[in-house]
Amino acid sequence: MPHTDTLPSPLKTIHIMGICGTAMGALAGMLVDAGYTVTGSDKGVYPPMSTYLEGLGIRPMEGFVAKNLDHRPDLVVVGNVVRAVYEEAERLLASDIPYCSFPELLGHLFMKDAHNVVVAGTHGKTTTTSITAWLLEAAGLAPGFLIGGIAKNFDRTARTGGGSHFVIEGDEYDTAFFDKGPKFLHYRPVTAILTSVEFDHADIYTDLDHVKQSFRKLVAIMPANGCLVVRWDDEGARDVATDATCDVWRYGPGEEWDGRVESTDPDTGTMTFSVLRRGEVVGTYTSSLVGEHNLYNQVAAAAAAIRAGATPDQLAEGFATFQGIKRRQEVIGEPGGVTVIDDFAHHPTAVKSTIQALRQRFGQRRLWIAWEPRSATSRRNVFQHAYAESFDDADRVIIARPFDTSSIPEDQRFDSDRLVRDLADRGVDAMVLDDAEQIARTIAVAAHPRDVVAIFSNGAFGGLHTRLLGMLADRFQ
Image (cartoon, rainbow, N blue to C red; front, top):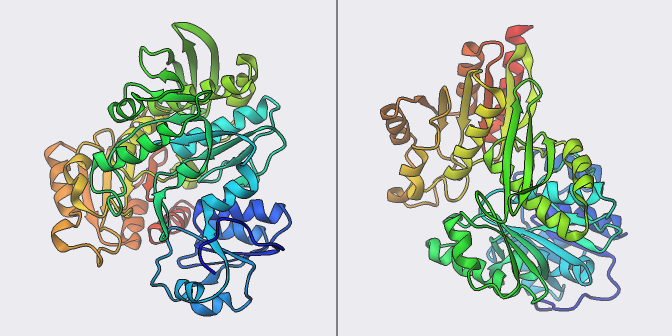
């Protein structure tokens, strides 16, 4: 059977190809909650998603091989990591098993009648989606949600919810091999947050104008009674939002919705800030999210929550009790007084803003950064020069070799040695090391109590996190 626009009936068993992606794993949890039997396949299975799936009773099948469909599920959901030439995909296309994309199934089952709050943009989607969902939860609105990461306040990355709102991270990446449009076009937005628009995903977008085309389509499908919450000092976001026909709430420095840092406490790792509307203080709140980028992520979330019906007083409870997100400035251990942090930052803007936030959060403590060029864009040299300006606020920097550049033409590959030379020219203490074992040993030997070590990667980084924690524990035992 070809790609299906309607769900088969009866629908009992659903197989997810690419189940270890954060959004796909989240969908798996929603399907289990709804009573479906869920199976899945992927390659490169590792925590935290592998642990999360095991908690749902799902053990992913390793690799995309034909036998994964031997159990003949009623429906197959195809993730965007799956290529048509994969053995499992070829068997699917040759069979009569109906299939669809993740956004299509989500829309059919969980979003059709909801007030959907879609959080989109190049940066800050996971954080802003997480805090928005929690603010609505703290206000008693019981939202459904799907988050492209693991928010610590919730025991799932997604749920159907008991209220009228559904909060979702709107990814601009393509939907599936049979649907090359961005995922967020399937999400029926009523309220949308647009945090930023920059060039990213160099494996599917050719340049910034190509990226903007996708975001303009999102703006175009906003209903007349909808609301677009836009970071107005971001040139790309402002550009694509100019032709919006719905209400536009502008946020950022000097805009209708603004924010002001009142104080930061390095001992507790918290920030007190005020949210302002038209220059008047809406409320003053304390949060575990620190840094200017997080200030405005929280301003956007506050604006969306207020539009959903939350009161300024209810926001105080939400901000105060928000516990953060895994892999977003997450403290994963403090052996010997060395604070080790896991973070997802990989785009040069995200690397820069995260390091600035860590500097604000931890004051003058010595700050190490270990960064792995792993994303499809960071492994290419499109941002070779931009990365040189991203590490200025760090004390010591270790750059790994790019992860698997075999599919990238040699003249397009990112050059770690060149970055270190550029960093040295800017006065940054930096070095290149070949693998996670070398990086862990180098840091473990040289780190002092009260140092902060932040590990930046959108993947497993060769197990660096576990290796380093173990070596530090042995040293300071």
